[in-house]
Image (tube, rainbow, N blue to C red; front, side, top):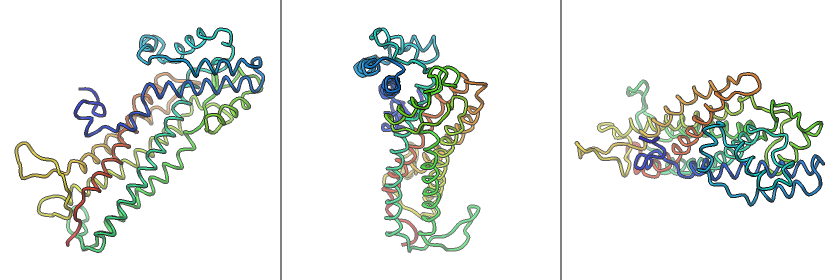
Length: 351
């Protein structure tokens, strides 16, 4: 079976086409190209290449068309796509190859592409979370005053109101959204270090080049490379895992509220059973729990990605490639599943 996010039928439950599109080969190639164009212009801006060479190289990059599938053999050999891309770009414009990728390394390109991708992921999640909170406010307005049995350790405790339960959902979600927003600064930044992270290929103009590139890409320009410092990336992963975890708590609550005999909530469109037609399974609520647990497990792997030996790691870096996109897919789907689940709530509490 292919992974559940892209499977022919499981993908209808787990998939998030909007987040998936942000990681598509075409979008990643566009980000790689944007990095190289920004570098070409910056090299000309500071006088590292002759006047006109940077603009010409950037024009070559902008019109370059490379089929993602054509890179497969190169990646199998080199372990990443950038060397093959640079060879093709320079072959297409040998007269201006001095302004193509000069002073940079593959990780500069791919980490900056990651920064651009995560910026788009964060923008998308922020929009969705605002909509989700508005729906929760509407549920509070409709059902908030109704009584509901409060439960501790899954036992009946004291009577509360629906608004109390909803507050227990909205507060953590708002806090997680705030943490995610704060984490953006740690990932939405240019990577520029060159071969060993010292920017030695740029002389004393490394920061000027970084500033010019960052302005073009609308990223921040740190005064150092973060090749081997993955703290910002791992913190971001923790924040999206925290968001999916908060939604998992909501899903667990709703699944328990929907139990026959408790009936604290009524949801339209529950899932059917092949053997028991009387059942209406809380599929989306269960999905929220599953996605939260999936991200919790993946976060452990991302912690291992902190261990970058010396100036660059291949193994730890590849681990990020396998885990982080999946974590963003799980988080994105958790938010859309929660939205669909909340939209289907017909009643909460004792009417």
